[in-house]
Length: 351
Image (cartoon, rainbow, N blue to C red; front, side):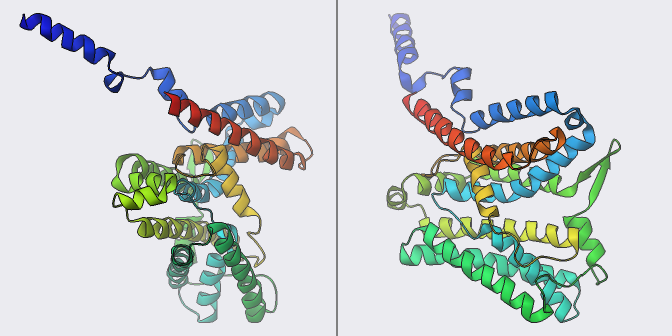
């Protein structure tokens, strides 16, 4: 009798949807980055076919570098978008951090590492300000960070012109600390005769850490929760204010890192730089699977989206095409990614 009851219980459990294992194909297709991965393969196949130079190891290293300069910021922007917010000041914040490090160290004749640390504090403060003002006022992050965008742009141009009389910062290549800072933020590592920029390695590290946080920690659950439904998340004890401010500060940290890379790569910084880059970061995150409505996306997807941009921008050059076609690509990819991401999310919800 007990055997019959046990068999019946096992049969009932097998039919219970709560314990049914989803097919591997269904789980793969429900991942937010699957659409961007297919797009990446298509882009690489296209340019590998039409531009033989694209297939060379040195060219692929250059593509990876181009992807990393976008991807480091795209990781932070993706986390912020999963949390349901935007940051339109991200592009000029990169320039602000580079100018702050350069100008402070140069004007006071200090070791460059002092300027680097000051720029880090400033970048984190800008992120904290955006997050605090968002939570304090309840205004959309679009409006708050648009205001920050204009303020930073004015500060970048005005202060630089006041200090140098021009639109670019002074060269820091002969200052104390330049060589060691360049080794951390802008050096090149040779692997198999091919030069790999260190930003590629940092990028991979940031993606790995962000993925671990999203999928393996309580903070990751909080990020998805506040992006999906802020009120419901607060009702179950999620510290919404801390999460939102922390996400904006993460964007500030990555803006600082990319700013340091630019400073120690080129020795000087153009004060008008960064304008428009915020849209590239957002598009890379969207192409990688993030929804504009929040609560859905991945760090890996943002990396794939950034790599698509790097491959396309350089692939067009290697193929000898008119570079203006890149703008057409941006628009097409944004629309396609938004549609694909919505379809994938709806499919996952039905399962």
